[in-house]
Image (cartoon, rainbow, N blue to C red; front, side, top):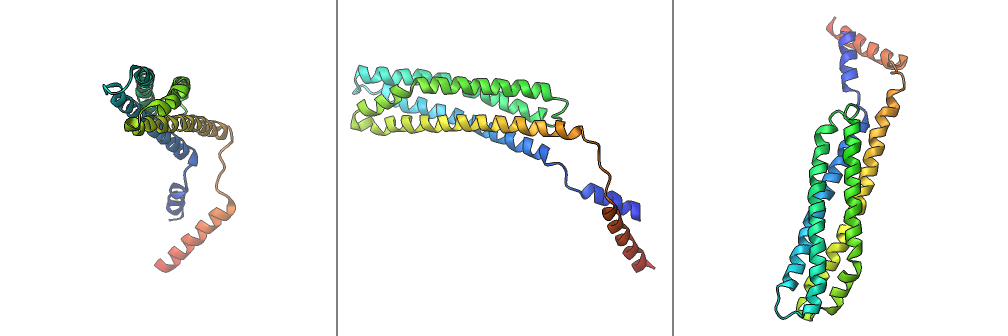
Length: 204
């Protein structure tokens, strides 16, 4: 009876939070990758409206087309981010064994985010210029480009925060693994013995 109670108690003890933290960070990274793709599509849609309107001057269209072209690059990067982030899911099931592969994927993700932010940053002036030069009829679309670009920048930076947090979570089990396993303390065993005694007394 006592050994059975001990086994149940050990099974019910809370597991390390490290794996949970890893899974949370990967979920955040995946979500941000999806958000960046969606935001890239919004940039494409908003600039497309301006580009296809015959009432818009060629000068304004030139600015919009430059942003549109950059948005296509952002779209491709976001697609690659989606592929890489999904690749993390099976790898984190055994983070210790797959650590090298995980680190490679994280490095690729962070490189892509850097490229994403660089392309977006290069369009900063064009995005603000577009908002000021479009006619009132297209102000809403130019503002959409502006707001979406800022949201994409925030999400990309947040994604970097989560990749760093993921790396930190991955490092915790490695540090803990070097510590010898601790057996249950005397107080813990005494408590189980007390429970066993009560159960035995009730059955007598």
